[in-house]
Image 1 (cartoon, protein in one colour):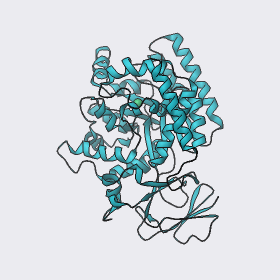
Image 2 (tube, protein in one colour):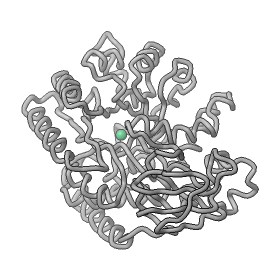
Image 3 (tube, protein in one colour):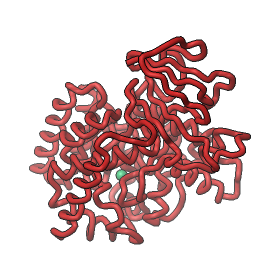
Image 4 (cartoon, protein in one colour):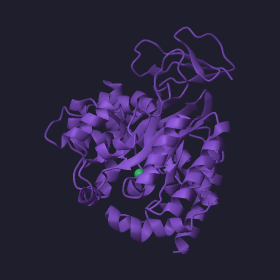
Length: 416
Ligand SMILES: [Zn+2]
């Protein structure tokens, strides 16, 4: 369907107000002519949608169950026991709930790692979102378990072949949950199948201390020794790293997914060293992480948190609204290897309209309003791949998703 958006204030393109979308693409900006559908965006910003580079979508079912605890208390004692009873139906509804929340707060694509990923893929496609999905491979040094995990990864990658909106990735969970054999298999399989890689790294101090007891080399040298660091890899957290790690991440063009809310909520001990990463030229993107450790998926809130957290270093210039906006859009898209995140002719139509409400008044600086003043609830319309997935804040089947996800969540919690 062809769509014309009229009278919008296009972020970063002063003077242009109209956009023609057809065939999933931005066809023209400026003089656009007619289309099958006209959207009047008077009083709204038009922006690329947001790209969330590290999530565990179905964990939305566990929102609020393990607050105010550190990772090494919350996960072993609450999250892992809950996940033992998880079924594919749970992951389907949990992912739908997450997609609904992401759409309602302006996210168009996300990079996810979890279990029962076939069900997650079905949910993502039905919601009309874009995603990179990986099965979270965890073998705990058990060769039998590794065989099962390899099978699960292969099965999901085959399943994802038919999808136009979802790209499969390989997801070795972390250096502390995957054996050397598992890490090596992940790197080799990703290389052979030309897949992206998604992993966690250097999130907590305990992870660093445990690692250093067993290894002489650094976290990133270790990952690199398997061939896991390259331009198709995203590493989440990266809090407990050092100069040689930043240098290596930059050299290998690996994307870092920065999760400031999650890091702060789990009390990981210090902020990620964004200043050092910037100096070394590391590709930094933004993410919410899952809903146990955030507790929402609102990328505008995350961007503000990220900027403010870094300014606490004593340098108010360290993380600007412009940098945050670029991470939310173009840089996030690039990390997911999607040629998107821009309002340009020929780009995929992955965009949002945002109501210029009281928080955008006065409108001296639209990017500043978006990052520092507004939140995802000001997003009114979302278009992904040229399809309208939210119109005037309404998403199809919203009530049914909330009802079913809620029931699944209550049942899971009652079982432990
Ligand atoms: Zn994570």
